[in-house]
Length: 284
Image (cartoon, rainbow, N blue to C red; front, side, top):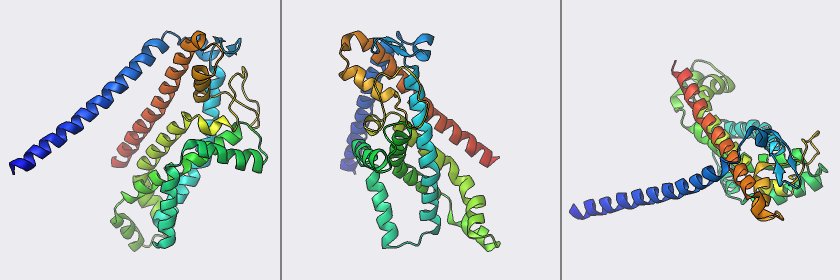
């Protein structure tokens, strides 16, 4: 008994040390970005276009471009992903085919983002002749987010008790009426939370948009879906590694990093707030 207690004590403390270590690293990184990036943040920095090869000016086109592709990603991946999850969990018969589809979806969730970028070039840019632009990049990110959306939505649907379904069907409701009235109201908070977290991840990706439409220096907003655009993650990548005057633009790079972190944080926070309000409405 004492040996088990010692092992349990050691195991818990090792886990605590791991957590503390990770949190400390995170604090150091965030402090470095906040302390150096906050000096750069101003209204002019957030609302003006870059100038002189991005050695001056702001990042407004990059902010707008990131929002554009995030919206396209959401429009493409959310309805399709949720619909796929509803079909797999509520309509599809359990069997080898269904298990194979689920396994494929989970494997796709772990595919490196650069692979999605190359696939987006082959499918959207070259195959469908969209060219490098906002639409091709958004659809590529949508493909990358789709497995995450399907998995998160299906897991949320599984949390709804079977008795909710059986009771509705016993009262004469159709399959879709049962799903719409007795399943989705309870599953939608978890479905939306997972979806928004997936979109937040997509908003910070560089590789999928690297070949499909992102541009480093483009001091104007895209006017159509086929236009190239600036985006915060790609902009930060170039500013930190490829710029001809890295030391000169380093403060701008820190400011860009801070804005990107703030954007992703706000999306994650919105997921938490939305889930809380939906659950509160459900209880009421």
